[in-house]
Amino acid sequence: MTKEFLNEKNIPFQDFDVASDMDKRQEMIDKTGQMGVPVTIVEGSDPIVGFDKEALSKALEISA
Image (cartoon, rainbow, N blue to C red):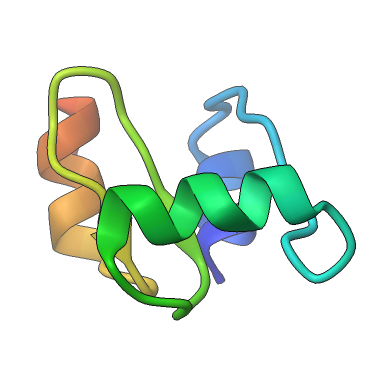
């Protein structure tokens, strides 16, 4: 749902598969303290765990 939301809003993003990329998995755990996905990191804001339309909109400064 996060990818769909970002695509709908024409927001470019990088997608990492933490199931197969151990370095990115460890980075995610270090930043969030957990293994829940998705994790969305917007520069200048706290990591967003799970799909949270309102938090994403606020972090990206766009309308939901």
